[in-house]
Image 1: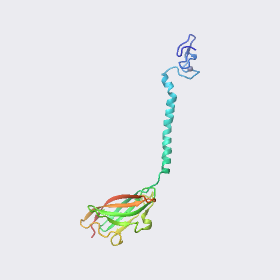
Image 2: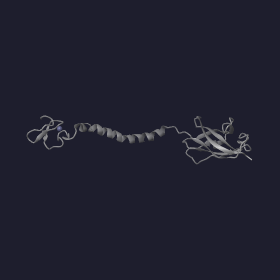
Image 3: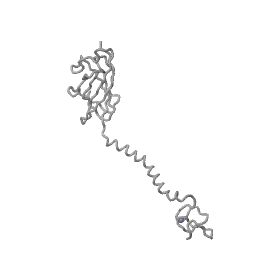
Length: 197
Ligand SMILES: [Zn+2]
């Protein structure tokens, strides 16, 4: 034993960490493993640095785990959107697409001409259920339910032409629907009509 880091007379030196006598040329202490050159703080903190790097390396795995687990507990919801195919003033052709993960149940489709406060009920599925055509399956973005409503075809549908005064009018289309727990949801779209006749 001698002064840590110091030299002794017989071609030996003392380890700068443990103070044991080691060979003068030794780069690493054969007893405690401490390097005899380079900054000591780097050596002292190497285990902490290794631990931090190990934890950081786990982050993607942990994130991946939650990315997999959370959707399992996440409640699937419907996501319905109305798509307008055409409108000629008294007849509206539309489809509904469901890009959600659960079934959606249409309750009503209403149309309101631009500038008008009065909505036109195209169809109310609560009062007049249309069976499977009002139930929109999930995960089928290309599966469309196409309905044509006209004043002549259905008494409960449009009772007045969409466009009455102008040749081309714009309107808002509102889709009311619900999920299987009866939670009300809605979606909207804008469209244009040409005056009939
Ligand atoms: Zn040592």
